[in-house]
Length: 223
Image (cartoon, rainbow, N blue to C red; front, top):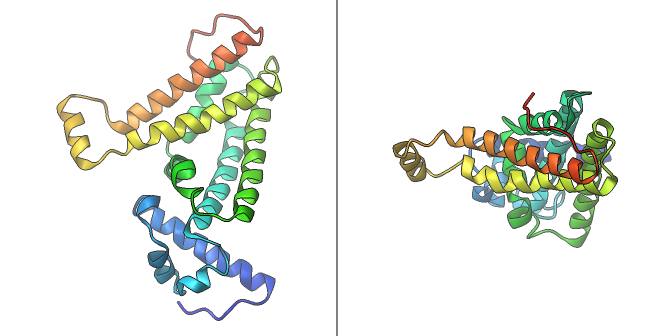
């Protein structure tokens, strides 16, 4: 694919969409840490220097993909959250909404350790402001269902969702050697462990936060 230099705003937007679309396609094939800027540039049909006219680094490209995935996921969470059922139902709905969203989980897992390591101050500022807005939106959605929580408690839970996802996701994608050993040991499939671990972790977090906020009740039963 050959591109002339974009000059009009709509041309710039088109180039950015092409780059992000290529990045998404490559992420279906391999992990973010294994994709180089040169490979991505070759795939989209631009020189590296031209790609850097639209994004200041490889990492900035994947942060933009993450931002789009994050927004789409929150739309799904809003549809999934139950109107009743307490913290167990809310936390379970949030956890289940992440199961199957491999691209989002992959990017969240690489966010702090990979993607935020090679960006300019301007790119970091723009991403962090959007990330703050995304986190606040999740916190607000949870508080709507659990008004006993204050803003701090809801934001703590929203951050815990990211931290647990980032921590558990690598274990859901072991190397082939590790996968063989896990099967030999009779362990459940790694993806199953991710879903179970995320659900249990988020339920425990949210039940604890609600209890500390004064909404003490019997939340032991699963929906």
